[in-house]
Image (tube, rainbow, N blue to C red):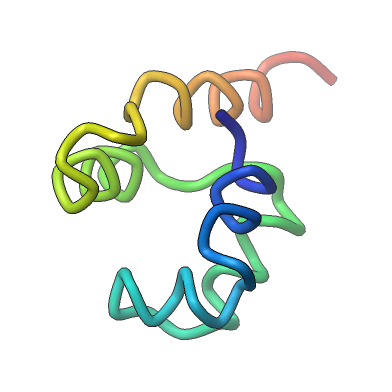
Length: 68
């Protein structure tokens, strides 16, 4: 699961932002950067009741840092 698939599930960046209680600009920044914080990934797992796994979201996060 990556950020784009998460957004697709919610239908838009705005809907994902609303679900998480953050601004759309925050979600837009995750897309631009290609990652979100590990804490945010865990929050998504908890809020979704495990439907989205933090490890799957963090997998993209880890790739975003070391491999350039």
